[in-house]
Image (cartoon, rainbow, N blue to C red; front, side, top):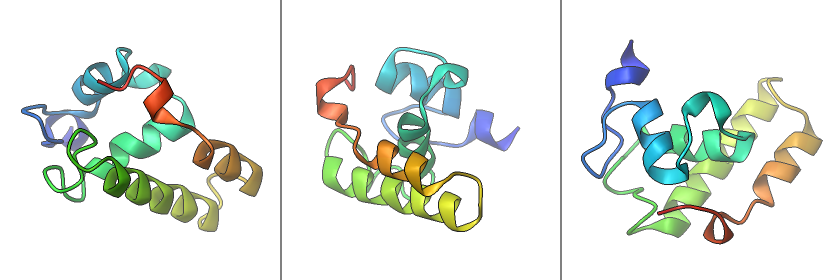
Length: 93
């Protein structure tokens, strides 16, 4: 319920809505890297806006990925592959 209502910046509420806004697809279709970027916004949506602070949002998403690995949710290989994602080549808008 929280993830459907949390403010994520740019006038967007909810993970699915932000997923549509950033990547033009539903949250269920996001890659690991894309999911980490959306999850990263929860901490400070205005400060970490990928439109005004791309590097900050990217750094926070890498922290999310690291914590996922540390907690055993993903492997080191999955983390490395997600960290290598270049969102500027994708549909980030």
